[in-house]
Length: 264
Figure 1 (cartoon, rainbow, N blue to C red):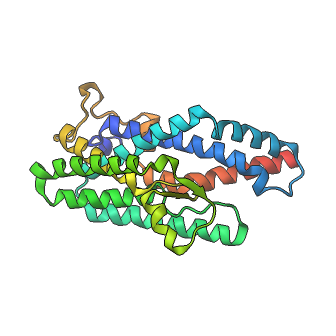
Figure 2 (figure 1 turned 180 degrees about the vertical axis):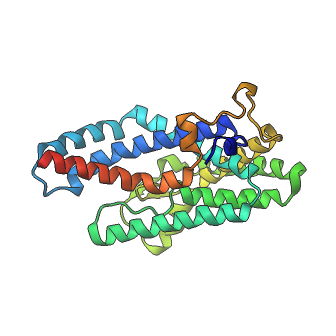
Figure 3 (figure 1 turned 135 degrees about the horizontal axis):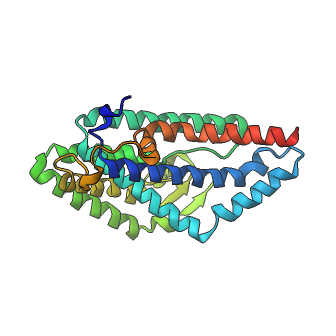
């Protein structure tokens, strides 16, 4: 795609989205390193345990927990702003929802055959699907009222999340059919990636409000950055769905290749 075709992009939105995606990839890499000794328990190499110890130290550190919340919130906010700027809400909901369903089916299949503990029942794309659907509903109320309904609804959903203390939800490794809704709403934590409706969908709605208020002209708020598209993070931020879908297979393939070389 030519640089000229990117002139309609908004620099800071692509940049922040790309930054959040890169940090997400690093976050998942740390967790994958922690899981290596469990995934390759039959491999006879000390490197697996060294990498596993490093991954554990990072994945369960206090600073990683803080950064996780910051960049997850940023990612959801940018998704909400994107919903405010989209011209086709239906396509957006179907694309993100289809990707979320695909990830759930793939991870469940992996666990059935390889017992990797990789199941994602309601992850970030699932929360984005619900949030995008709610943004679509808000858009039906028009430019004048839709953004305020989104703000009110978003604040209410976030508040409910804090009331039910989603951040303290019990983490379980097995669930029954009647507990699925508890996972979706935020009172029970399950899966390797968990972003419940309360509060995550609310963050998207707040992002929708910000998008409608700040980007009425659909251009960067920083005049000197308008039309800029050649930054690394911007390139990443232009393809968030593909990056999210492909980053884990790429990370796993790279780790497998590195371990194969070390063992050889």
